[in-house]
Image (cartoon, protein in one colour):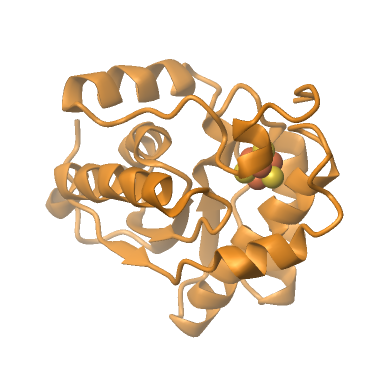
Length: 192
Ligand code: SF4
């Protein structure tokens, strides 16, 4: 595995990270070509103890990978407000589009303010998430912030398998549900 500290001459890239396990494999792939700055903004995760547990896993992954981690505010009230009226949606339904947009828009704003011209996200590692939908939303929000979005599908080329492998090797907590309370409670059926 390449240690990010060994390659100081690459363009900067903001990587929205959804959790440590997904981030582990994506960082490993990206540090060959980019100076990766990981950014945490996941107000969807409920309850706060779960949020903090996942954040602690991400902090460990960032340390082991030799990349910085920027922690933006935890704002579950704003997430609940954005998703109001969508709590009965199944995982993969309309609430997820709002959730993806909110998280990526916040990180895109941070990247623009920080002078970083490229953004991507670890969200596409999940076999349960549509890379096409995430990439379309990422491109829209980045256009609004005048930065580029790297459309990727990180589950390809064994990305998900590698995330499981690395998180096991490093002892990183792996959650069993996406993040929000309706997903935890199994509201509706997963649509992907
Ligand atoms: S299921 Fe996941 S992506 Fe969908 S709204 Fe909940 S936390 Fe967000």
